[in-house]
Image (tube, rainbow, N blue to C red; front, side, top):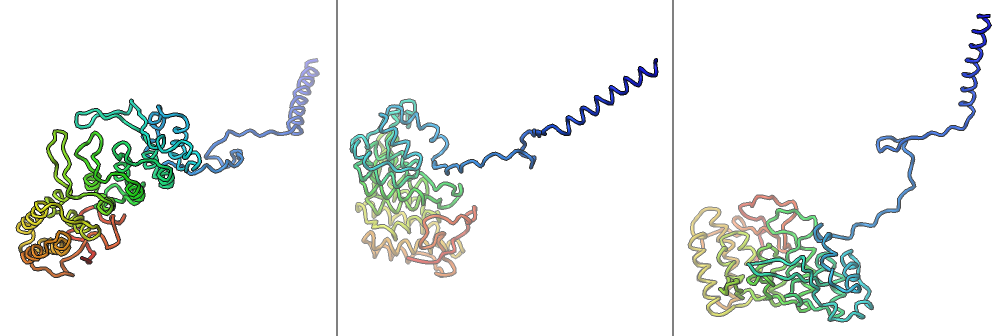
Length: 370
C-alpha cells in the first residue's frame, strides 16, 4: 500500500513538471527588457525628428527675462519681439501695419529698473535692442526700413551693440573679437543713432568711451568714421567734465596697446583737430611721453620710439601741425624700422587672433605703416 502511494505521488510530480515544460516551450515568448543607455539590446525608439538649431545667442539671463522685458507691450509687439529673439525676421507687412511709432517705442519693465551713479534708471525694452541681443542684423535692418528710430532710449541699442563680443570668442584677448556685433553698430549709426549720446543713467559714458573701455577697436573706428567726436568731453553726474577719448588715449599713450589704437584712429578715420587747445594738449602730452619713454637706447625704448614716430607722421597732417610733429620726431631715440618695429595687429585686422598668446609680448610682429 505504501509503495503504491509513493508511485502515485511520483507520477503526479513528473506529470506536473512535464506539463509545465510543454506549456513553456509551446507558448509564444515575450521578452521584456528595461531600456538602458548602456545596453545595446535596449528597444529601438523611432528616430526623433532633428531638433532645430538653438536660435538664441543671447545670454541665458537675457533669454530667461524675455517675458519680463515685454510684460507691458501689446501682444502684436510682443509677438514681433519673440520672432526677433528666436533669430527670425518679422514679416514686412506686419511691421508696416504697426507703424514707426510702435516699432520705435520703449516699453517699460519696472521689475528690471536699476540704479546708476545713485540715480534710478527705468528699464525700457525696444525692438531694436532685442535685435541687438540676438545679433539679428536682418531684423534690425527690417525694423529700420520700416521707420524704427535707433535714437529712442538714448540710443541704447547702439551702446548694447558696442558691448557685445562675438559668441564663443576667447575671453582674454588684447583686442577682443566684436566682429559679430559690428554690422549692427554700422546699421544703427547709418540709421541715425547718436554717436555722441550720453548713456541714460550713466551720463559720463559716450559710445566712444564705452568702445574704448571694451577694447572694441572696430567700433572706435566706425564711430569716428560716422560722426563720433573724439574730442568731446562728457560729464560726470556732479557736472564736472570727463576727459575726451583723445585725452584718455594721450594720457596712456606709453601703453603699447593704446599707442596702437591711436595710430589706427589716425590712419583709418577722418580724425581732424579739435579746438586749438585740444591740439596743443595733444602735442604737449606726446612730448611728455617721449621724454619719459622714448629717449634712450634699450630695446623697449626703441620700440616705443618706433610707435610714436608712426603716430606723429599721421598726426602732423591730421591735426594740421606738420612742423610740430616733425620737431617731436626729432626728439625720438634712434631705431631700426624693421628690427625695432611691430604692431600687434596686421593691416587688415581689428581684433587679435584666437591663437595669440595671453601674455602681452614685448612688441608685435607686424611691421607696416603708416
